Length: 471
Image (tube, rainbow, N blue to C red):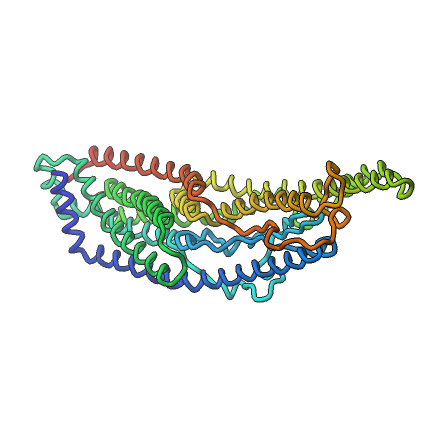
């Protein structure tokens, strides 16, 4: 009986102009998004390559004369444009590009790299433009289509007088709901699957990336998350259809709930972010606090410094204390900057917790995690930068230090020689992205809650339909 009902509903949907038009809109939108994405991605990749070229030039100058060039070395540690941002860009163009790193002294800058960043030919906002991603299409367009196709799933049968006739044939009410739900979900899922596959083939032919097992897995997980998200709005439309006797009232309620869930709650992020950041100092105030912490540390050490004269042992002792002072001074400054950076990250995480009440926000977080983009990407790069700082310092201590073995090492011109280094052996950092395992772990919490919402709403639909008047 269930199979017959699903077959009947699918046949009706195939012949429906609404379903045909919705499928065509979804498929063509994905292809259009793919074409726009190719140009946007190639532009971003070109600018990223310029950053890498600038880093290589700076490291080559350093390798030729380490001690002399140390204070002039600046490396731009920037986020690599990800091909998976086709799935979800997560507003990466609105985020800083990355971090500015200097091997000597204060290593990082919390005032992130901007688009210009001193590199000739880097992008401006107007040049990058707007690049839609598939998560935007699913989050807004497909959720709307899901409501538009399901708001009269029950009321239309009531208005046509066929609901009582269908249920009079010993048809279980749960089967009727399952048939409607499955039919509408298939009507939206099929064009999404075909569009995704066509988009990936187009990107592959355009040279954005090669089709690989990892890329296909990301696509499949994205499709699964999208289907669950669309299913929620199909159930929402059916639920509203069980509440009313007329399709007009069901449509109004469905649209009001769609606006609240998709537009109002997710778009409140900017306001909530501003409220969360009210207690944080400005960038200039943070810099002043960092400088004060560094100066206080330096003053404590200066009282311990021996005079700049005397025996070689005293001079060696003074140099070691100076290097410890410089190290602690840099650490004090960086700790202040890091703490406020982490607070900014934490404010975004707290907003994410608030958005747990919006399936649209849960879907957005899941999609960006699958793609490995946005704030998740920036935080991962920050971790990589910190590791790179340790690797670079250890390399210089091992390969170029002029200090006695066992002495305290601080990377400064006094502690390294000016003998040339092999450029190819210098540690280099390029954003390697986030491995699939890390993306999946980041996705699971939001995705799991989204599934729970769907199960809860499905239960509510069945309960309501079993108790409603079918006349």
